[in-house]
Length: 376
Image 1 (cartoon, rainbow, N blue to C red):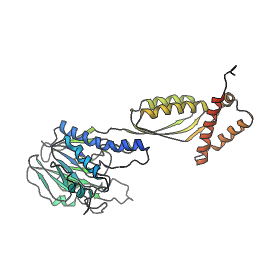
Image 2 (spheres, helix red, strand yellow; image 1 turned 180 degrees about the vertical axis):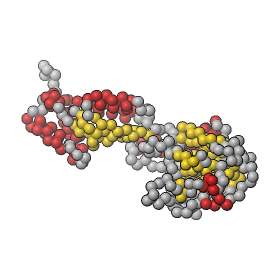
Image 3 (cartoon, one colour; image 1 turned 45 degrees about the vertical axis):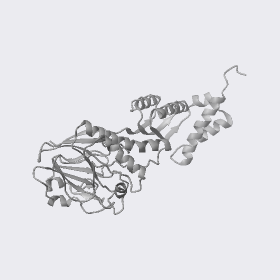
Image 4 (cartoon, one colour; image 1 turned 90 degrees about the vertical axis):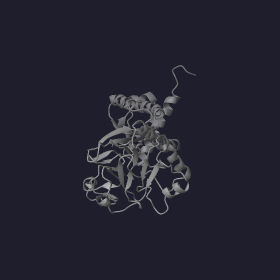
């Protein structure tokens, strides 16, 4: 009974320019860690092979060191690794794969599937029909040859491809690297392992995207896992079981503040998030100055609990109450400034954001200059 680990879209060498340098470096390094986790999972699950359905590397220009680190991270599993070229690491005449071979970085148990031809693994009980990309984009279905390919009787027919299954995108979008939705049926495949879709997606019982093993986007689409696939015999329906592999969870959170109790609700929601996550928080609505200062203190502590904690407060208006202004002793000219800043923060312009920040800073300065009664 052959058993596989199906993964794809490692995107080794991916850059995270939207994050602070420290966070970006750690997020990039996590992509090596996840290969080690895949190797451990493959060993623990006693799989016959690891199928990697394209985009091992994020670009052709990754460094030699990155190439070496990638293959060294696979050392925890000594069985076959079958690596397919995808659109980011297409098998060009001169490619990252050619460099890896020249560097002597590819271990003996790693097979680079860079040509569309049947690869037989009789000891493991299967044959692989790969559809490697030899250029970044094509409008031809590179899996079409599967229908005519012959494999030895008794071996599972496993397809390995990277692209977009037809009918999954909006009708007006032309899909590059197309794959027929019924390819598994027309080619008599027992399983078609796919890459390119960065989340888990089962097109049908025999055609499945594994998704990327390390989440990289704020989408709840089943990323951050790999698949263990069991097939009892040729013709039997695959049993697909997802296993979590990712180091960081990416969370996009939006909340509206309108009344005082909303602040408590927000803090409870954020407290419930997994620690060391990558968080993108957007707030809108209204908050008074006292509430805003409490929010800033809370967010400062939350940043320390997570790998990355980005906030978007452009939709959150500071609305000083009469009690706020009275507590700041902001009468006369200062009171007029507070009123003007409150008016200017309306909207989403850069001036509005500046006014919002200025209002918060002014309130903080006024509070700091307050003297206790009787102080000298």
